[in-house]
Image (cartoon, rainbow over all chains, first blue to last red; front, top):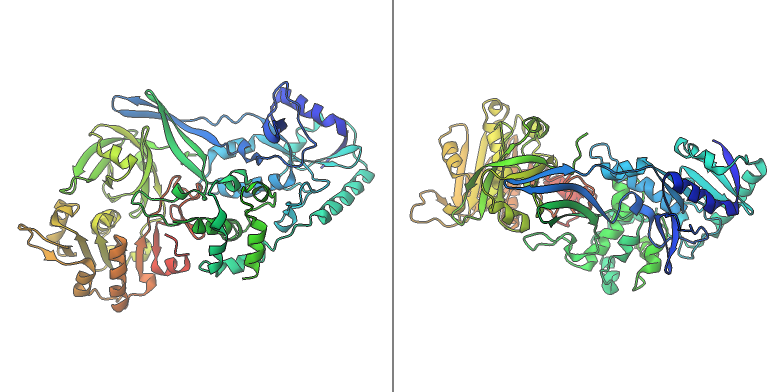
Amino acid sequence: MEKRLIKKDALAGIAKKMADDFLVWAPVKKEDNVLFAPLGRNDEPFFSYLNSKNAPKNVFFPHTETMMKYTRTEKGMTFSAEVNKAEQSVLFGVRPCDAHSFVLLDKLFDQEKYKDGYYIAKRKNTTVISLACATPPYTSCFCTSVDGEPVSSDGADILLTDIGGDYLVEFVTPKGEALAKYFGETKADAQAESKKAEIAAKAKEAVKSKIPAHEVKPILDVNFDNPFWNTIHGKCLACGTCTYLCPTCHCFDISDEVKGSDGVRIRSWDSCMFPLFTKETSGHNPRPSQKERWRQRTMHKFKYYVDMFNAISCVGCGRCVMYCPVNIDIRKIVQDISKL
Amino acid sequence: MQNPYIPYPVVVDKIITEVDTKDIKTFRLKFVNPEDEQKYAYIPGQFGELSIFGKGECPIGIASSPTQKGYVEFTVQKAGVVTTALHEMEEGTLMGIRGPLGNSWPLDYLAGKNIVVVGGGFAFTTLRSLINYMLHEDNRKRFGNITVIYGARTPGLLLYKDELAEWGKRTDLNLNVTVDKGDASWKGREGFVPAVCKEVAPSKENAVAVICGPPVMIRFTLPVFFELGFSKENIITSLEMRMKCGIGKCGRCNVGSKYVCKDGPVFSLAELDKLTPEY
């Protein structure tokens, strides 16, 4: 597909122009954080960010989402499905690791038998524009260990790569190509492409943090009861930060909220780190302590998801490593497992 | 395509208090839109999410058999928020059900075999669905001998008493009802389910045991069936886990790589052996 060049300083303008026509989610500075948020008229997108604090999964899978509405009547309730309000959107400037997470989430939410209309509607109506990591953002990044690369179009409709003075714009899918008019007229030359290839190779090389993510699957297959699982969770606070910031964590709760005679059924993010997550009405809890919860989280990412979908459910963004308040490091866990 | 998160509207047509402690009731639900009944075509062993305004949902096994047309029944113990609300409902109330969810008792595998149904206490509900299905005149000849062993703590805690009496009159069903402890009016058998299984000693020949009950009953019943020579492929049970979505997405009811809601709740012991022991 076609490739173009745009001047580096034109990027913010393009995002804002798109925001006139679509809902544009872009990285914006909010207090000390860079977050993906809908770009308002007076917002300035911030593209020199390393990575956003929140994973942009909330664009397709919001923290809280209304699934249906209902009204109390004299004889119980009447209810109606919440129409999927998925307006045409652009997710502008996500890092390739996060774009990779969408491919993984698709496997779960867009299965053959049970389709999750809420997720799918937003996903279908959103064009993903990835912003390649010309230099790896953090020392905690390990995308190359989990089927990713810092310059990758996986999960993207358009890939932007900083090649010096310009961004190389690659239209990856027809959905991306449909937005070509926003990216000027300058066709990319062979020189730009070779420059990109050079940058991609260097960026890949620069990801120094590596984990044996593929090697641990057969080890996890036979080590459910290994005493190793006693060694991870001791300092875990069960705060759930790792799961909330994780681009691939998808667990949710469904609950009802009522105001007067009207109510909504909502789903909201939940976490396998929380004690109540699996606690049954009888009081029985199949995962009674943080040990079992950590085993679940690790197994889910590196074994169960592989069993179910033939893919590791980790994109190597390193958020859980960076933001864990007690420095539990998934990279060390995987490394330790590889030595069992 | 049907949104799997949205319940079908149903009306509570009939409420039957099953036990003398009054905390287990059967709810007969009728679809508000008659065409929904077709969409809710289910197989014994499946479950549904009962949906109550302002309270939420809870997953409950389907207690009626698909051979019973015009309604769906759920037998529910009063335990948590949703089931308590359900127990306070009156006939005529509108509510919702989602499903049918999960796999089912493996009817095709059971066909042509002798079936031993073992149930304990309140876990008898989806077994009752299976029994009524097998006993239906359209289906009875597809199955060999049917032996039922069902126990409750007291006579007052036995579910479906009228139906048990009807089944007792049949000649094509070997029914064994037992209570841990009888009362003055109880003329039936006394004893725990595992002991009764040992006494009835169903033959393993061309037979499958379908077992559902409290963990303590399962624990003592399995060795009896191993001793009788039943293989793990031919002992089938159903698991319970905390659930929300019921369709393998919300991530809480997995046992290893299997979601109990979607890949279960029915598993053979051979299948369970391959799963991680976390349920």
